[in-house]
Length: 373
Image (tube, rainbow, N blue to C red; front, side, top):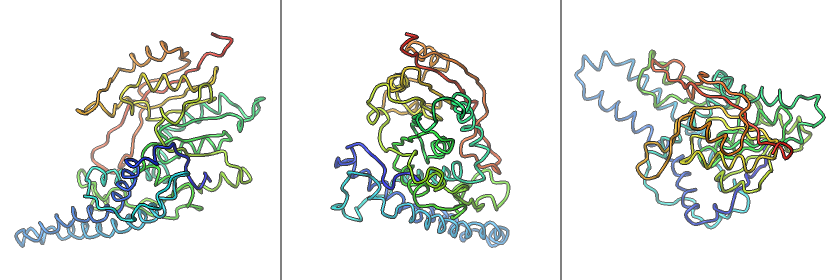
């Protein structure tokens, strides 16, 4: 298991950060009311239709009523996720904050709660195995190849960092291979859910969620919206048992650029669907280089779906992969291997009539050792 409390930087003691914290808590608490209101709007509309249309839509109406029940089930899991979240961070005092603060429903935030449910499907359900094989297995295979068990250096002495760890499955799998691994995540949506799964789920398939209740389009069957997913598909506490109570897996909250300021610290940095989260990818890559030890390894897999490319409020750059390779080499990395057009899905609804996939890139780089410079 990971530590009961996540480490964090001092930003979470700032008043604006406290306000943000409770804003996210409110988004989770607003999930059921907001989601069910959308369903009720459709049900109310059906009631206004001519009788012959209503008769023909009885099965559809029944499905919508089942969706309401599925949202209730999701809400119960969300209640567990947000229970005692104010105790999540070390060295952060929320005790004097009111339990309830007046917030208007922020639709974008509530939709991120829905995205979080889909992330649980991707990272911690049997249904998400295909996506994890596509995105995580190449990274795990590379680590096993670079650091075989029969090598002179023990894996527990190799420190691996996973920035943008999301719900922590990749970092968990790296730790399960015997490495000392730390995941880093900025999003409170992800941190709340990962804390629940990693620290409070001791067993397999303990809970059910319905990730697709808001997926109203492109359904081939009425059952597609109400298809359940069980989680977690593995017992997260297995790490604790494997390591005789020693912690080789931790999660740290905060901004990657602000939390990790020690040069030459990490043996390996593994990034998956991460580097395109930056408004300036150059800065991210420079930072990865800076905090890697000489001779350290950077493994990356993902697309370049730049998160700020359509933002009107923030400056950003969106270089092509060819340009990114130029950046990588200019900083000093030695590009060792690469492959392109690797099909990868992300939170795919496998029964949907609309399926999107990325042709991701996968590459490995090393920071030159002191003798190579």
